[in-house]
Image (tube, rainbow, N blue to C red; front, side, top):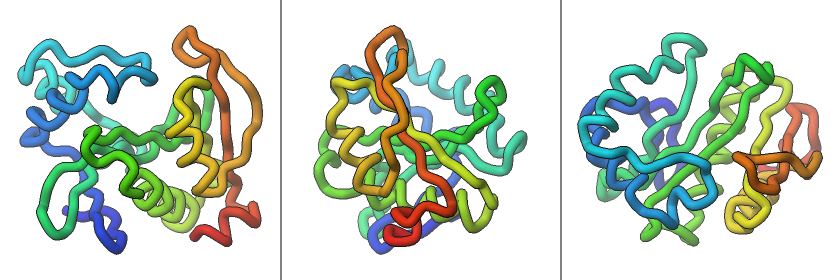
Length: 174
């Protein structure tokens, strides 16, 4: 079931059938280098993660599979995540390395921002990245997010960005 659609992509909820995709995505050390996450130990562990992923039921949104419209290939994921402890929604994305530098993170992130502001009526969405992750920082800047502060990100120097529904950058990009 498609949640969002862009010119080249559609985003949908994860399914149990995505277990191998997530397993392989997190196997690439370059993909998870700046995330603080560990690789799944097996496809079964990825399946258990998917079986227990409850953000769609709890909040009505979450991280979504990003699919190429033409090829139907799983490119990675992008989406929104609510943090109860911080009482905020953050944007995140992760793609197979072969799809880097093709605009997919920017395209899917813009769609997620639009969804967050228009469908979920959010006032603000944040983005975090390790300071060393310049590619992700560039995406956050491209989609109109503004630098807020340096932060501790998974025991590394990091940055916090945000965009508000009322920001001029938001209306330009969406």
